[in-house]
View: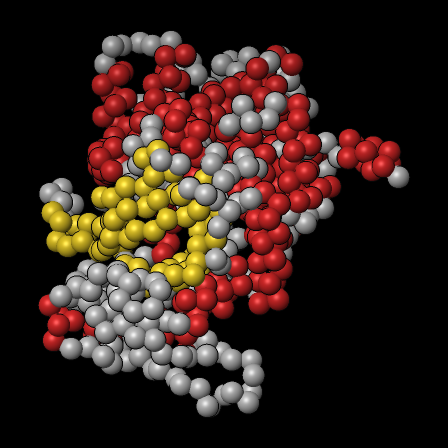
Amino acid sequence: MGELLEVRDLVKHFPVTRGVAFRRTVGRVRAVDGVSFSLRAGETLGVVGESGCGKSTLAQVLMRLEPPTSGTALFEGEPVFSLRGAALRRWRRDMQIVLQDPYTSLNPRMTVGDIVGEPFEIHPEVAPRGSRAGRVRELLDVVGLNPEHINRYPHQFSGGQRQRIGIARALALRPKVIVCDEPVSALDVSIQAQVMNLLAELQGEFGLAYVFIAHDLSVVRHLSDRVAVMYLGKIVEIGTEEEIYEHPTHPYTQALLSAVPVADPTLRGRRDVIRLTGDVPSPLTPPTGCRFRTRCWKAQDVCATDEPALLTRIGTHPSACHFAEERHII
Amino acid sequence: MTDQLATTLVAERPRGLFGDAWHALRRRPLFWVSVSLIGLVLLMAAFPGLFSSADPNAADLSRSRGAPSARAWFGYDNQGYDVYARVVHGARASIVVGLLSTLGVVLVGATIGMLAGFYGGRLDAVVSRIADVFVGVPFVLGAIVILTTLNAGGDAGPARIVAQVVLSISVLSWPVAMRIMRSTAIAAKQQDYVKAARALGASSRRIIGKHLLPNCVAPVLVYSTIALGAFIGAEATLSYLGIGLRQPVVSWGVMINSAKDYLRVAPHALLFPAGFLTATVLAFVMLGDAVREALDPKLR
């Protein structure tokens, strides 16, 4: 099957300006700095990384909520960033987003029926006026909510139910891709599993492809076919779920994996724990060469001068480290 | 079983925010009290003849400061005017000035504030600086300048006098409504639900109308109910300076001003118009409060 979405060298820099009348740019926050990946139909790509590594900015740019600084994204071979007018509207039907915070992502003054029905009002060609109420009820039923609650307001629902409403809204136009921007990180752990299972069911039912963003490796593993690990605006390692979790080759991925809690108490303490020192450097002035070198135990002189490309050096998947080697973590 | 389900589904018709708000309002006694009070005052303003047959401009110094009696329910003021007749006839000017100024201030201020808050950037910078200029002018000084300039033409009819006062209040007060609306719009447009709407392909008009306005209207509504009373009072201030409403226009503000020097000898001449003013403002405040609560699903 061909690539549904292909992203090439995507860059998003936010200018930092000073002054009121005469603005001048004093720096740039390199939120996303050259990200490339592809997504096949029906597949889930997990994107993990710690806070501030550019995951959410990536989602915003992919959804065209923010203009990219440079780079291209092809959706079914069509360049996304140059779409205008009717073509842009048409494309929006194919790609939707589920946002992180279910408490702010639903308009508190709209009924659930209005929220889930809004996609049909914006794209009236999808459902004729008379059938909309029925379609909304259908959608509520699909995401596991009572269709009779159509006249309730968001505050009358729990966090998990609200996230289901957000999923119903994203699902309304029958998109091919849904970008999930940390859809479960604001929920209780018990509710997280329910929402994850719902997303998995919907994927099977509607043949959806997900770009699944999370900061929690175990959450991503549950759903992903492939995983990309981000650090400071760049993908440092990308591969299948097995390649990343069983055979990680980038030191950052290894450090992240070693921080995942283990359920088995007999393994506790016997495991290889990698503690990273220091903080993530500022994306305003990222380190030269390899961005991870300031916190990496393998760093050599070459890391400060040459930026490692995302290449397959060892094993079967690409990793952006000069000294990539496998290290068993879990 | 399926038939039963189908009927309950049909029975539960989809409703919107405003339908629900109206539903909630209808069941609030406070709403009906304020509406009937406002209705009464509006009736008085439209048809003063229904309430009093006395001439509000008939002065007779022989009955100066006469106490309330069966002939004149609210007594007579210093000039020997019938206070009841003047309260009834004064409703029109006060209500017209208060309502039109509030309407003007809120419509102009809220529209500009919403656009400035939503679009931001250069539009916001220009509009905000203009608003700063108007805020910087002291109200009374600004009104004196505007009204003396407009009054230079000589004698004006009652409609022109009222229009001038409304205009000067609106011109000097719109920045307040604008700032309130601008700040709430800026806060609301950063919410995730606006992001979700944009991802769905919603137009700017749709985002403003469906998402921002319902979420931004409450603070402006509160301001406007308070402003209504303040504007009726401002009209009285301008009248006192001799540049606002004046003969032959009768208003509560004019009456309060002329009565306040005789408060100790003829308190009724001040208390009755002041009482009507207070009740009217209170009715609008209660109405605004009820509407604001009805528009917030969490408070319903």
